[in-house]
Every structure is written in C-alpha cells, then in structure tokens.
Figure 1 (spheres, rainbow, N blue to C red):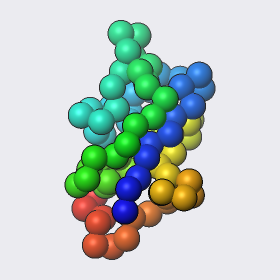
Figure 2: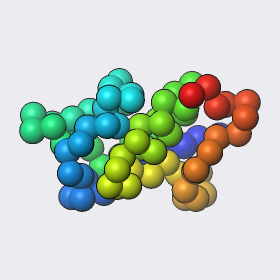
Figure 3: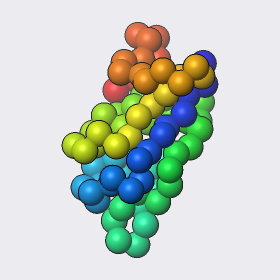
Figure 4: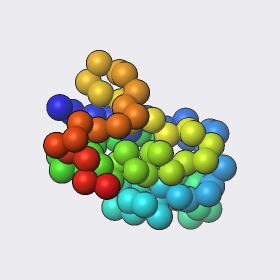
Amino acid sequence: MKYRIQIDKKACAGHARCAARAPHLFELDSNGYIATEGFEVPAGEEASALAGARSCPERVIAMLDAEGNRIIKLPAAMDQD
C-alpha cells in the first residue's frame, strides 16, 4: 500500500522531533522548520515516516493512505518501530 505524508507547514512550531525520528525523511529548512508540505513515503520507510509524524507535538503531520485516510497504526506486518 502507498502512503503519503501531509504537513501543515504554516503550523510547524520548529520542534524538529520529526527530523530527530527520521532525518532521512523529514527535511528541515535553515531555521529548523519543516521544509516541505508533504511527500510520498518510500517503500520500506512506512514505520519511520509514521514515527516521525506521530512525534510532532503540534500534530501538523499526518500519514495518509491511498484513499486519504489518516493512519494511526501500521498493519502488524509493517510495524517495525
């Protein structure tokens, strides 16, 4: 299944917890704020992407499935985190 990260970039408070959890997925700008409004989750990176999204204290990051439903937990076979 394909997943997408959606970010409310304007609401980012710059805690950078997403990048601390998954720096290879969540790029920050030079001021420490999220640099993108979203991205397709690479295959095999689902657990890292979800961990990064869930680490945001402002809850401005969501992981969505192909139908646009918010993902709270991955299927057990994919959950490596």
